[in-house]
Every structure is written in C-alpha cells, then in structure tokens.
Image (cartoon, rainbow, N blue to C red; front, side, top):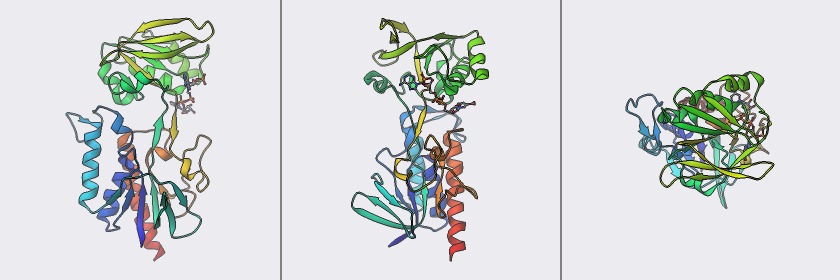
Length: 306
Ligand code: NAP
C-alpha cells in the first residue's frame, strides 16, 4: 500500500499537517517518533499559544493536537523512522525492518535545544531550568536568573529576561562573546545584566526548584556556588535531520533548506515544516502555521501529479 501523505514527527508542525491532510481526505500516516509531541512536552505552562487565554500545559496542548489529528482519521505509529529513500517515487521510509511507501512526505522532526548534560539540569527542567526565554521568561518576574551561552541567542534571551527579572547574569565559558557586536553591546550596557566570564556551570542546585548553580572557573578550576532562581540555556539548537542529510539539501547547521514554492524541500514531493527548517522563529504557533502550509502544499502537488 502506498500512502498519499506520510508525516514524520509529531510536534505542532506535524500534527497540524496531519489535521489538514486528514481533512483533505488524504488519510495521512504519521510516524510520530519516540519523543512524540516535540519540545512542548518539555515545557510547563504555555501562555503564548493563541486561543488559550488562561494558558495551557505544553503536554496537554500536544495531547489536544493529537486528538484533533486522530479525530479526522490520522493513523499514528509510535516509533522512530530509521531510514529514508527519496531518490525515486514512491518515497520509502523505514521503521527498522518495516518499510512504508508514500507519494508525498512531510518532515516535521523539529530541533532539539542543546543542554549541558548535567543530571540535575534534566531533573529540574520546567522547574527553573529552561531553554526558551520566550516561553518561560514571564514566570521569573522579580526573580534572578542566569543565562548560559555567548552567542546571539544568549544575548537575546538575556535582554528578554531583563524585562521580568530583577537581575540577569550571563555565564560564558570564554572571555569574549561570539554574538554580533550590536547584540553584545546591548546586553553589556543593560543595567540589569551582568556577565561572569571564563566560567562553566557544573551543577544545578535545588530540591524541587532551581535555587542555585555550582560554577567552575575555566582556567583556575576554582568552584563556587551561585544563587539564582532560574537557569536558561542558550547554547544553540540542533535540527533533527540526521536521517535526511544524504537525501535533502540542508544548511551548514543542518536545517532543511526549502526551495519552494512554500514548504517544498530540494526533493519535489517532500515537504518540511516547523523547526526542522526554521532557525529563526522556533515558536509552536509558527510551526503549526508551516505545518498547515505543508499539508496544503502536499495536497496541491499531489493533485498536479494526477
Ligand atoms: P551559537 O552562535 O552557536 O552560540 C552558542 C554559544 O553557546 C556560544 O557562545 C558557545 O560558546 C556556547 N556554548 C556552546 N556549547 C556550550 C557548552 N557546552 N557549555 C557552555 N557554553 C556553550 O548559537 P546561537 O546563539 O543559538 O545562535 C545560532 C545562530 O542564530 C547564529 O548564527 C546567530 O547569529 C543566530 N541568531 C541570531 C539572532 C538575531 O540576530 N537576533 C538571535 C538568535 C540567534 P563559545 O562561544 O565558547 O563557542
């Protein structure tokens, strides 16, 4: 059996693509991934998704998306796609030894924030540890927060957090920022933002909520404790495109390049939506928007092929 639309990935982009494709009677088949739901599964309250004036928990929002996709007949496999072949049609996608064929494919495997890899950082995620100031900054009104990183994202996150927090401390592992001069200057000149140079975070302290960090000086090796209410990681994102790098054109970092029109990738009939092709906006609502676009693009493209 050849699917009309096969969707890989199940965050806001993939599930919105599924809702639209299902309602267009394309009977989408989704390989949702073992990290189903995507990055929103790692957040707590989502207060910037339109339609939820009182906010909604990230996992609950994704559950609603999933229900809506299933309601219109999306079939979902809870597994990771392990191999693809887009060199001829129908396209082929594997989950281990199981092969699926499809006339069109929508890729929405998202991106993953990079983390430091500390045990307590993982444990306190959503409890003071975050990788998204836009999502979680609001909860730190009148509190003190730390931001790790020295790139444009770290500057942007620090400047955003300074609207809420009483003090923002950027902790950077070197003695100069990688960020653009203008962004760095804005952060350095901000009266609520301080910088600790040449320093790494080696532990996150707190039982149920972040209470502080253990820092280590990069050259002297000296360690010290640092009191803070929140820890924001801004050490980059990695698009989840390992599987596609031999089949599709990607940029230097690995984000899928769209050649257009709309969401079409370098292979005609293969579309991409959400963070996997977006290093700029990275919002649930923008991902959902491009998911909708990908389903409409796939539908039109399939109609043209007939
Ligand atoms: P980035 O430029 O790669 O910077 C990552 C930062 O994290 C670097 O300063 C790096 O330190 C640090 N870092 C990486 N791994 C670390 C670790 N394990 N421990 C401690 N620190 C670590 O990433 P980004 O800031 O997310 O930016 C990505 C791209 O988006 C860039 O091209 C950026 O210009 C762009 N962007 C632009 C804007 C804007 O213009 N408004 C906003 C955001 C992002 P080192 O410097 O020592 O390597």
